[in-house]
Length: 437
Ligand code: HAM
Image 1 (cartoon, helix red, strand yellow):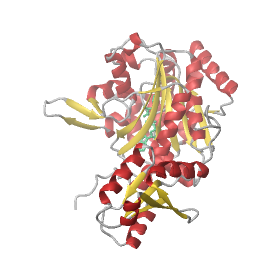
Image 2 (tube, rainbow, N blue to C red):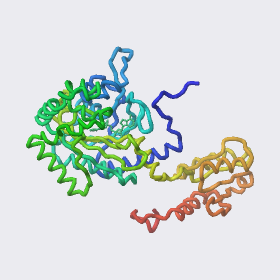
Image 3 (cartoon, helix red, strand yellow):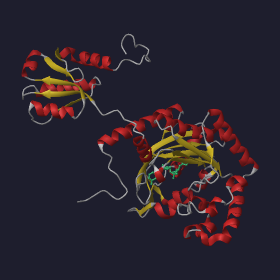
């Protein structure tokens, strides 16, 4: 038997309902913050990730899916969205045609060759957002607020917002030197990877998954102690704006994030939900003021974040958030051969009027047909046999009340709409709700 590839997942229809709800909330909250959707390719030139995400990162060193296509091009399945979005903005010169900052969000699959476990896959999905073209610390706070609003809209309230600053280029150079000086004499107490990182990219040591509890790292100098005056002022403003908006947060001095493009503010949103374990980081993000120039674009200081959708779904399951069960409005049961053609026309016209309709496509007994309908959770059964065909009528059975009534075909649509309206009363938010909403 051919099976799915390790680290991938089939998302079955009953799970898809949960995904759709999360995706709907992504769109609602993104609209509130006035972010528009962008869709970029799931593969890009390998060089984009080497230059963007960074040669020194675990992602580029160990986790990318790389291949040569038939035209001998070096291609990579995207491990994250940010470099591809920035490439697209540069290539399409979006910064010349739209006001800055550009505010874009995206949803889609990403690929990382990691060791799979619950909440960590080789194909996973991200909801990301990028605000491109402003260095204002208001925007850092705005993005953190956007991410926090999204989690609240999902019903995830037990969340820790961790923020830190790794500063501008000057701060990072000063910090890298101090960290190297501190760790070098104790080099042998670090894992082999970190010993190498110490020479190439010392800050990555703080992000090591092996040395996570190493006391040496707990006592190491922190980026916050090496911020330039400008970087400190930027971070202070971000914290002030968060406070003003009432976004609860904690400064986490060891937070550096695992991608090379960050400058100034970095942040993570962590679920405080028992059982999430190592996969409790739902969102990671930060400011990346130099990425556009690294990819040969203009100076476009930016800030963004990304959520892992699988982890959001696990978190919602853990706290038992129920998604509304899938349902249909009407299930049509056709009895006999003759009424079939008319029944199909009825189903089609109901659908045109917005009534979600399905019918049985097998020759089953009446009992079998009801059983088939039951699985689809309908509001109504519509029973249509030869008598009804001759009388221009149809039997309507309401599942909830059990009432059964013969309705003439020309009244059917109105009848169903009236019943459904009684079932879900108008919220009173539409203009004409008293007459015909
Ligand atoms: P990241 O921290 O690498 O950041 O990933 C963001 C989120 O994606 C993680 O917090 C996690 O929820 C999810 N994630 C990452 N890897 C996996 C995996 N193997 N399986 C399941 N979920 C995973 C970025 O990707 C940056 N592009 C974020 C960003 C946007 N920074 C600025 N703009």
